[in-house]
Amino acid sequence: MYDFKFSDIGEGLHEGKILKWFVKVGDQVKEGDTLVVVETDKVNAELPSPATGVITKIGTPEGEIIHVGETVVIIDDGEGESAKVEQKVEAKTEAPKAAVKEKESAPGVIGEIEVSSDIIATSEEQKEAITNGGGTKVLATPVARKLAKDLGVDITTLRGQGENGRVMKEDILNAAESATKTIKIRQTPVVEPLRVQGEVERVKISGLRKSIVRAMANSKQIIPHTVLMDEVAIDQLVALRQAAKVQAEKQGIKLTYMAFIIKAVTIALKEFPGFNASFDEANEEMVYKKYINVGIAVDTNDGLIVPNIKDADAKSIFALARELREVGDATKARKIALSALQNTTFTITNFGAADIAYGTPIINHPEVAILGIGKIAQKPIVKNGEIVIAYVLPLSLAVDHRVIDGADGGRFLMRIKQLLSEPTLLLME
Image (tube, rainbow, N blue to C red; front, side):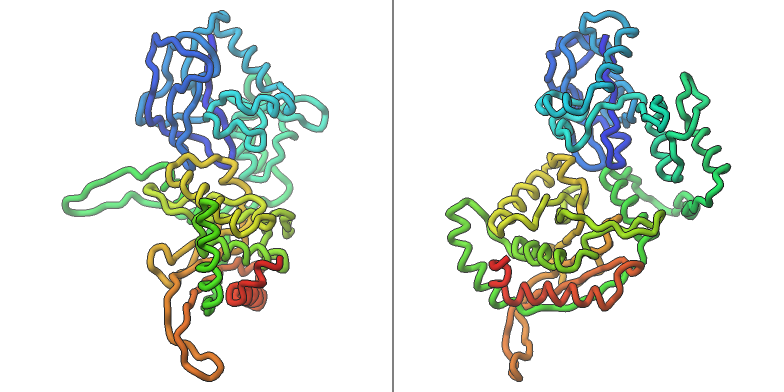
């Protein structure tokens, strides 16, 4: 028997919603066959069968939530009873990382999206073994691991009270209370159920919307935002894009202004590394990233998702335009790979797509800044003492005021303005 569990896929994703089953009890399946589609906070993922055999049990019905460690299906694979299942799970979890890389095309618990070794090294199903300083293993449930991380407890120093010494939630809470150092825990306000009068309709929000709620609330509670706004005349950029569109179309590329903006941002981030960083509040350290992964806020039918373009600073404007289209299409279809949602270092959001000039964007924690792009419009400006009509792009830069001063934010924004107003500078990098 193969007890197929829903795995902890990281990035704070600890549950999913069963959207559609493709099998039923008694069906014969082959390894790699699609079993079910699961909606997580970020993507819709097809889960392939990890074994060949007959479905003997389906764990969670359509429309209900499945949590990490719960059974997806049980498959009679001809290998014996449940005792052998644990052996198979242990064999998978103990496999070296190198073996994972050799099997990147193999099926996994969230489909081909998560097989890549840079997303998750091994499949941790009901527990994770963590090596402590003495070389022994510390067993802990996913819930306990997350709680320990939230409370700043070193789980490898604990001896759990659970079976075989497994660390439980209670062990983490006890350790947090008895710790010699002070652990600061943010208190969230008590939210009372909404009471209304008159006829209403109540609709449960989606998993993605729940994720957005948590992320936005977390960011605003932690980060003291300040926003700088300005605008830049981009007549030269408009002309350059118009001239380059023909060549781009020959290569099958839709050349948008966003590709130029990303290029400008990557140049500015290299010159101002404090904007491509994170603030480690617990250790009172700035963490400067040596890579630039630019996140682009994408509006989908279910809500905002922020995939990123890896190593954006190393790519040409045409390459950025091509990847923008690919990433945007995959995100709107909810087929974006989890790797594209991880390790963003700086985010750009486009108000102009909604015909808006200015806004106050919310920083994507743990980043320290976000750039908002407004709609491009022709308007009168003063140039060389004369009033002329120009194409103007509004910009809104929100920064973490704990670690970025207003003057630094102004200099960063000025550099972006210079690069966009004189776009030939973009081609010299």
